[in-house]
Length: 61
Image 1 (cartoon, rainbow, N blue to C red):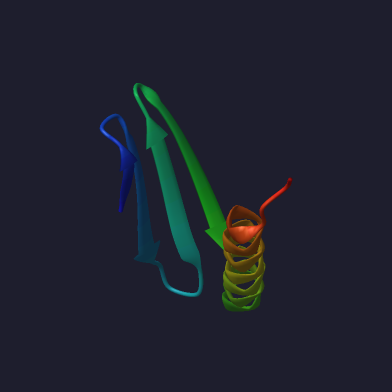
Image 2 (cartoon, rainbow, N blue to C red):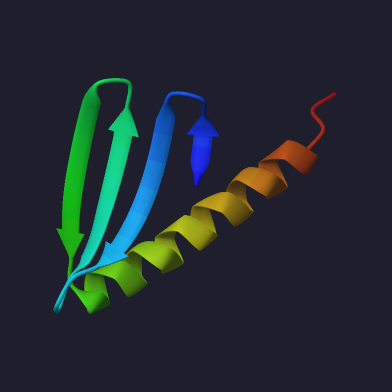
């Protein structure tokens, strides 16, 4: 999954963890989550994206 040309996000499965790697230019951040933490993150991302989309539809006069 790519946001910009120099930013990538990859997700891998380890034994009992979900590994999220966020690379931006030369920097790299690795986050290891339990399955429950990964599910919680999914829910929070879905809520944030839905909220963002609703805000984009609001028209302020």
